Image (cartoon, rainbow, N blue to C red):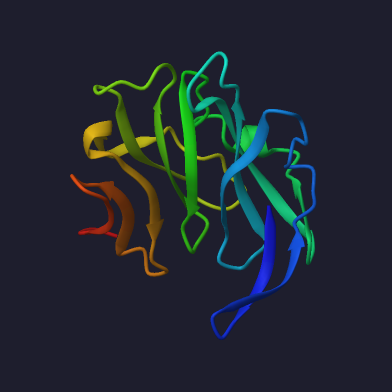
Length: 182
């Protein structure tokens, strides 16, 4: 994973993000990540790929890392505990997005196994009362089969609008949904 400075349409000063959240193990990579609005917490998704035994990610792990300095994030000692209600080895997780107040974690998941026309992708949310609390059991907000694939939720700062990818007949597009109750 890398970071850089975006200015006038150009990314400069590109540097690798260091830290123990990256497994540095063959087959594993940081597939997706989201960062808190204040830049202090990295919500990451490690995924293991092995084209001989599975198509796509074989397994995934969600975690939370805290900023050490401008180029380093290390996994919180209680990361697994904070995410214990979300983590289920039967699912593949990706595209974590934390809300601006750090109390709602959105992500995409699907049941582990071969992806078929009936594989259902779910956009989920788990909530908590404060930054040091565990996230709740996930709530499935909406789901679609791979034919109409939905993924990668992103929330606006005011938490009123969610953007996500949706597969259409000829391409993918970004669509949105509005929150009716806060």
